[in-house]
Length: 505
Ligand code: CA
Image (cartoon, rainbow, N blue to C red; front, side, top):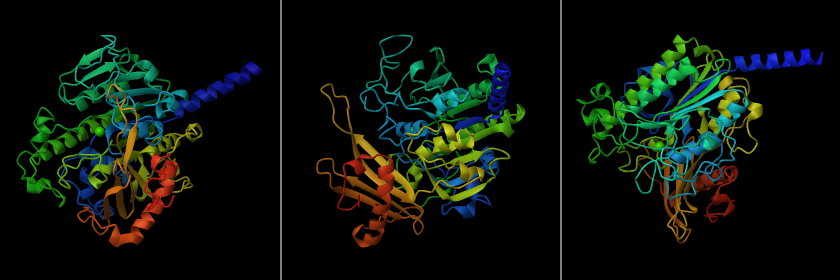
């Protein structure tokens, strides 16, 4: 009797796993929310107060009509590694291990080995887990598998990294690298640590690998199990200077357009030396759209589309001459923080636009797990919120935050070798449904050094930096709303009561 019961239980457990949805998370690096063509189409245009970029993205346009689309997904710390830390762990940058970009002389920034990442949860739930593309979440160490004791690159300090199996957090299929920006000559290390040098545009090559994984070429996964696959395209990402960086056929779509046709955001300074880069930026976006379309097509061909949760998002955005800044990211501007968030699961998620939910980077992990039916497995220590009920329409019990925290850290103290061993929390702020506020402190005095305050409803392109003095009521309200966000993030501004004369801790 015991045997029969055990057999029945294990059979039902197997069936439960078999019915669980596959999950594909696709995220290019530097793709702002505005750079998707559907925002200029009927049914979408009226949900946002910006003019969509004039980009050709037919696959995303079609996908958006089948998906739940957020207007306000915010990359809290709009820089590669910190965002990835929050995405993978469901924790803000103080607890993910990744307090700023990962580079060899910054050992302070490294994905926590002991964190229960989204991939650990899927692995423990019986999923095959695959990571394809850019990772940029590890402190580069001298661990070149083909040259032990050496870095995988000669650049000093090293940026690129090889990720050994013990740091892969449940991903049992690996085809990845740390960070590397030669877009048509990328390289990867596979599950066994073999290196491949490729002469192909990286998103196209990674899509080839993703489709191989989906079709289970070479039996790389257990076909009885569902799979969780992250596909991390580096483009769109600088450099944007020639057709060495993007597909020629996509560049051709923009090559003859005047800059005045391409720069539709009135906050862009088109006299900047890099202004012509926008042609390569948009070409990279169109190229990524084509590759994303290949993944969707493969899902259809394999009969997997109906039981696969597909998410399209990005690390952070790209300023591309907006605000006259040369920094494409790492700022509180909308072009930098506002990222795509499109989520499709046929029959479970009703397509439509959600303009109320302001999603933060750490919310993505628990929300995906919740949609996949693994809410009970969300680790207790995470700081993100599970908004799956909002996507599935089953319940909306998770309360919405008033806004998204804005975070910027810079290097803190260094050891005798010059290695960065702490971080300085230089800026914090909040993005609400109406305002953006960012406060920057002086490293020596800890006092307010500069501020940005925008009324994003009246001034969607953030062209008037409002005086804090003249808008005291608004500033007080926003500072009060920052307190629970800073507390939830276990942020040093909360624990050290930074700017306590302004922020009512
Ligand atoms: Ca990035």
